[in-house]
Image (cartoon, rainbow, N blue to C red; front, side, top):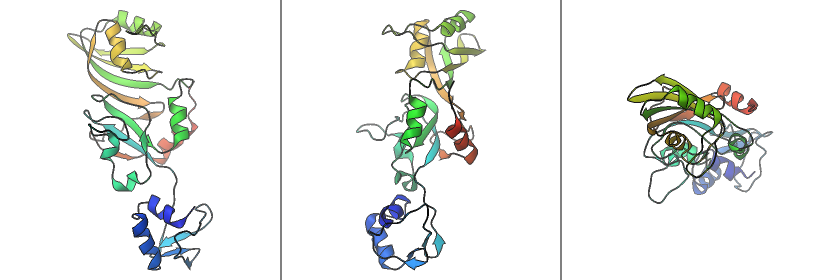
Length: 239
């Protein structure tokens, strides 16, 4: 990989900025000053320093965001703010994207990465990765609803969902629930409750596979996955 691309990807500036660093002799590869932006370097084998500080190259970035309402799960949009708009420049250089989508008004766990292979593995319909949501429902959720979700419900377009695990946390005029599903149909949680005559008035994703939302993250905040979280994701094999 070209040295200027490596430095640019790591957030050391634009290609123009990086060329100036190289011209000034600030970059060394294997203790030899490199001034040619086109020089190829193997990040796996070669040591790199910038002004004497070791450069640690990485190809992928893995971020956990507590998605706020009003922001869409996309890389760009002409009208609305996206989750990518919330990232810092040092993360944008990796060209990350959200893994799956949360509705515009839905909050909670969103994984953002540039690892296409991991994203495909987590989103593939064949994998049945469980996703757990907390929701506030307008209406009393009953044991009959638990049974209906367990058997799968028919959505407004005729699609019959796979079984969902519904847990009632509080029942009354409004009900607090947790729902675990293994699909990701458009507005699925809302449409599942519509199928049993109820309406979702608040929705938050709590987990996806082995990855659980860090509740210390404020809405709109994000952080890199810990080594433990990343290891769990990489080793995860849905049932």
